[in-house]
Image (cartoon, rainbow, N blue to C red; front, top):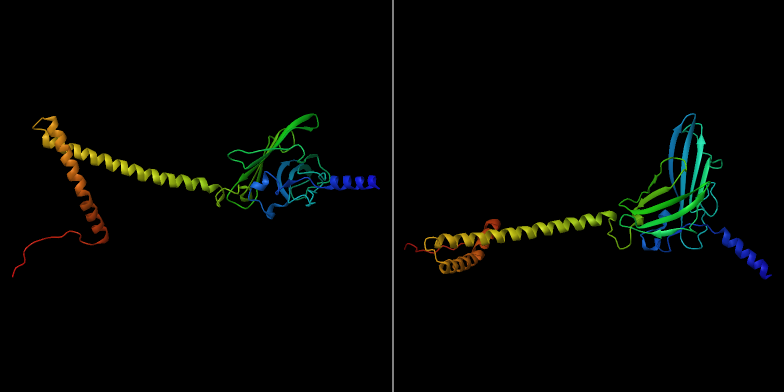
Length: 271
């Protein structure tokens, strides 16, 4: 009886699909939701007369251990990432995935995850046996402003002949602590920093001009005397006079902007 239960458990475990689980790290740190669950596909085609080559790649995402979704499409049941290369007579013919020229499949068993500035998650498979060679496979999940899948493949050939590098961009792959507008958060921060930098530069520029004006005024007033003590005394007086005139200058500027006359004129009235 115990042996029968053990065999049943082994069958159930082996039947579970291998997939990127959005409830587990590192994907649980991203803004993933149910929209990307299931099979996601990337296709490319190449006209090679007299045949037409189709490259079909499938990526499976699931939600939790109880999600039994499988990648299908002629791929092994435990596939997380699967590629099928087929040939047909023309571009109008649907590729027969059951008769592949090449088939390549990966599960999450030997995947190693990492990340960098451009990619929220990077899935790496090293030295994967394929025929007479070992190849490296990389799938980078990147943050973007769009909810549409943007999947691309960097490879020297439409056939599986060497290392494979996939890039998959979607707004759902942004980190939860990122800005709401996907990759545009850094641009907003840089614009704000630029604005603050310009304002600070203007303040420094005005301060330098103000200081130069005071020094020049003091120099002109004492140039005929030639005494250094008189120059510094005149410099102090010029600074105090200029500083005292700042509130009046600000009041005049505000008055011109608002249209009010802030000046008060005194005099005698005729009786």
